Image (cartoon, rainbow, N blue to C red):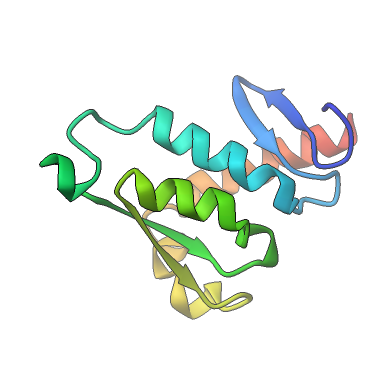
Length: 115
C-alpha cells in the first residue's frame, strides 16, 4: 500500500483501506472516480437522455466527501446511504447472495494484513 489509507493490489483487486480495514475519507474520490470510469455508457444524467444509477453505501463517516458526492450526482448517480453499523438488517444482500464473495474478500484481506 502507499501509506495509511493506501491502495494495494491484492489478487488483482484494488484495496483502499488502512491496515485495520477502514476506509479513509480521502479515498472517497478514488471510489467515485472508479465507479464512474466503470459505468456503462448508457448510465448518466437524465438531462443528457441517459439512465441514472443508484449507488448504495453504508453511512460511514468516510463516505461524506462532498466533492465526491457532488461529482457522482453530476454524472447521474444517486446515493442511498444506509445507516452506519446496521448492515445485519439494512443490507440483507450481504447475508445471502453476496455471502461467499464477502467470505473471499475477508480471507484476502486477512492475507493482505499479514503481509
